[in-house]
Image (cartoon, rainbow, N blue to C red):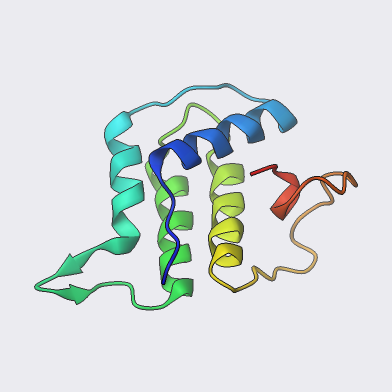
Length: 115
């Protein structure tokens, strides 16, 4: 079973990222959020468009970055959502040297975001 995001989870994730690292709160367009949540589950003629967990994670990553559903923090939210989605589904986002250390609080989860 694949664990997908809800709109509420994406909104909470974005809120926490902006709280922790700064920026502007706010959604630019609610329709983009609905599309974002639906996209990884997309089927055409009963055939799943994104079959692997990694492809589905890439859809979250691409759609948050390219569609800019939020006023600020889209790239931070995209990378964090991708990592959390992979983690929820038994995979790990690996990008050594790319991400900075976001704190040493042991209560924080993927990429420093409490989720």
